[in-house]
Image 1 (cartoon, rainbow, N blue to C red):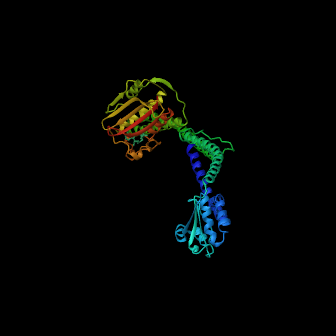
Image 2 (cartoon, protein in one colour; image 1 turned 30 degrees about the vertical axis):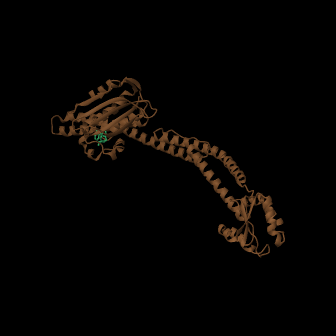
Image 3 (cartoon, rainbow, N blue to C red; image 1 turned 30 degrees about the horizontal axis):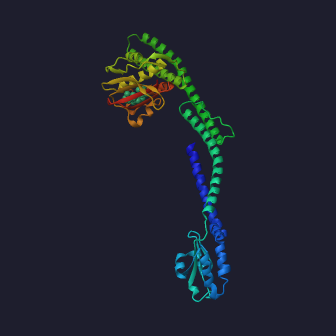
Length: 439
Ligand code: ADP
């Protein structure tokens, strides 16, 4: 709000200053300098005295009258060589001086005029100029009046602009709030603005776009779920048929082939189960939150891992305490990370957990990290590996197994708990997967 208002404020002040200058120059151009007009009015007594009293004297008494005025006036009248006055004047003033007009210098509070153009005042007077200094000129007050006028205009303009930008700002805030919530996965977030709102057309389009995205994602989820679900039945039938076939084959050479086919079928079944699990997470599966002690649960997760040549080193802080979460889902995420680490590590896998201070006002957070000394994840792949079916090139061969769903499922499960899963490099030399959960 402040930034928007400040920009308007500066813009209005700049516009008003520009308007003040334009008004001044336009009036000067059309009607003459208004400040000079004011000064001329303020010095009108002295000008009147010069033109109607001194200048009206006969040629031999002109100087005498000037001296009389000098004696009684506070204004300093002086006779100067016309050449020295010419050096001070330029442009329009210089031309007026040559024409014998009275030239006013507002800044110096003075006026200048040639004494005589045709030698009628007194002998030699054509090359002299009369200057009057200390004239009672004060344009400061007039300038102050102008300033007050412009400041009042600026303030009166700023009040409605302030209200307007405030209303605008609020609507924009609401829109950016909706965009944030939508981006964080709350697909039902909408702005729902009134037609009288200034950004209503934009809000309406954003709501419309959100509707379409929500519908598309729901359709995609449903399709994934339905297809996975429908495939389960023929797989079950195939499994049963394979079993019968294997029994019938006895000890013939066919058994090896049938074993291979059963292995492929098991893999297919696992993929379908993974897909169904992911579809459920995508559909915003409701969490079965229950308080449980995190330390023992993590130990149990390590214990249920398939036997591996590499031991998992657990470094769990003693103050982990209890956490209210969906234990099955959370341990599944940690299990996926541990299985990956065991798959890619050269000889070391470490699981650590501790309580840390959350960012900003977030209070305490729980941090669980799974590290290994394997090849790690290249920096430019660290975002993408959480996408479903995404595998690094080196893992494309089936030797490492996996469908590229493990990390995607883990990251969705953590997000459902309001947490975040990220990856960076581990001091052990490989990848470090970091789970941060609100405590
Ligand atoms: P997969 O089931 O294929 O392991 P994931 O989603 O679990 O799929 O992982 C995606 C990809 O991220 C993997 O194919 C692998 O290339 C990479 N990856 C995951 N964990 C690690 C790790 N600990 N070290 C190195 N690469 C990893």
